[in-house]
Image 1: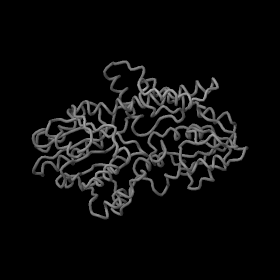
Image 2 (image 1 turned 90 degrees about the horizontal axis):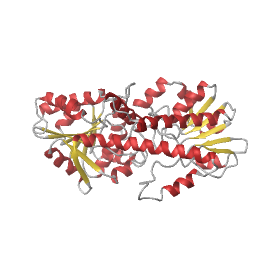
Image 3 (image 1 turned 135 degrees about the vertical axis):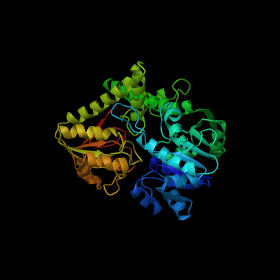
Image 4 (image 1 turned 90 degrees about the vertical axis):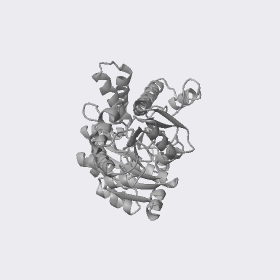
Length: 430
């Protein structure tokens, strides 16, 4: 198949790499010239383990072409996968600016194209968005959805840092189809995998349900962790036993006490759920408590640092989780802001983030918070020279350096990087 992918960020690049590996030809579309220049050289604009080799090979073989010409990409492909961001507005409502802009470009391509074309939305969209907002824009082409072109919602379940693994081993493949023909054609892309075909609205809603539950799991585990520590209980041993019950307690993922949740999905999707609930006068106290509990955990971490009485704070890991360079809604950025306001001197090291390779949202975050650039170093020793070291991400190179720290150092560990260190060690929940 010939596939056009709109939005060459974390999701778009993984999909390009994955579908190329399955023999498909890809046209990657993006409005960011820096991303396009990197991709044309065979370099991924984002970090994701195992992805770079596929990108460089695809470019070399001519199976991945990139462009800013959206209408041309529609004309030259069979299926379009839309992966542009849907960030939160101040109110919590999702911002459809990028989505609507892409749809207008796709509509222009549909107008000029002969033959049936399927547009599948990977972006997280609230139920009703496709039918009430997106299809009317696409039909400005003069063509009719379900007759002249197809529309589906095909949510992605890719975890940053494990994106390639999740592409090749999806927990489920959901196709929310507007019409049967759309679903039939999109199903061809996923031959050999278990597919659940459902309505467009359920396809839109399932990602929100998933991410709200994941946020709930993280907050629940962290509350149990804080209570356990106050009782002298090892919360990791406790939760390991809890997770042995696969019948009632479901799965162990997100149930390890430690880091507050963050990232581009959980935070904004829970906000969107709350916004839509308020708009409909529906009380959702459990959903409201998820973010409140997460903020409480951030407060707890700030308090641990404050109580050391030290001024010089080193941070290992800036992204919202390990094995990615994504800073969107990273809890540690909030913690750094709080510590900075207290007069702390902060130094940060993250092997996946470099001031010379900042694009898109990450670049915007550094422009909004220029002091992050002053704090960030490409030398881990800059952070290790501080009096207090916060371990935010579980990255292999952090373990030996923490274990070798002298007794005068204070370690506040959010990920249980090790149990063996001479330093004054403080696990956030153990």
